[in-house]
Length: 131
Image (cartoon, rainbow, N blue to C red; front, side, top):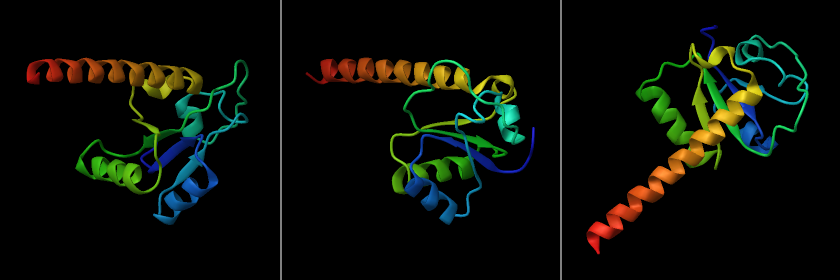
């Protein structure tokens, strides 16, 4: 794994990518021509074509080489607030480094749905307690 800071991006518009690079961020575009490999292979700029079912229409940003600290939290908050809306964001870990990109998408989408369900249940319980 590299220590170089890089953000793997998928599904972002040209305008969103332009705004992010304008902030000095190093982006690596994921597309059908390179989405067939693992996250590690993507980081290493290997071009392994995606085969199989379409990857879907979703915005994903995967942070590589960033420490999971307040600096990253601040960066993510700024990106969400000013540049990219509705993106799923994740960080490279030792565990997911060997995952294929399509598996990572599947995992992130499942996780997002679980979080939505937890939030809906939390809000319902709060409304019940207030009512």
